[in-house]
Image 1: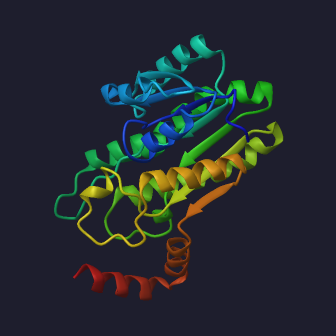
Image 2 (image 1 turned 120 degrees about the horizontal axis):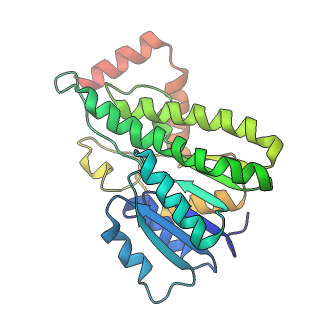
Image 3 (image 1 turned 30 degrees about the vertical axis):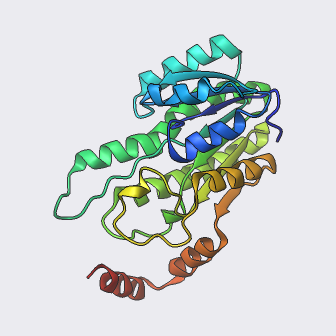
Length: 251
């Protein structure tokens, strides 16, 4: 998959992984549509004099359907079509049984899952009609087990399954659906974690891996290898063993 001469959307492009991908894609002769809730943070990318790409920025809360619809319509009016959608926006809210509140679930699932679903609804009619296009959903290697009372893992597990089903259904229309599953990446979200994060990657390193994976049209882009292997091993543990080990870690 070639980025040159393509129109590419990136959600959650203001910080972390989204920003790193946007900065790298700005070096291509392409059109970039960048969205975030804090549009002022996108100005730095848009106004970089070294950009080869045409960059347009929009304020958008992906958990709000009307925001997504409005930005999609504006982007289509400017560029005519979108070729590649990198649906990267995500949130992680630390939840325990002591501070449990359903509002955190609404926000987490609203961004991490429904944000992808809303954008997908916009793209599908055009992608099906022209029988081409790519949807890239950023999930996580944390989608395989609970790792405690957390809505983040549950939302990413739901996203992974959603993308898997979508990939099967869109195959007959020649539309690519790619699932990105990073390990720990240093971002404002992971900076809030109060535990050791093994094999932590910079956003720039992670962005390079993801973009190369998109170019190769890899169905699953997962990294780093050590974390992939570790999560696979954890996923194979019997429930009783997993619960005992994780309970001891949490003590």
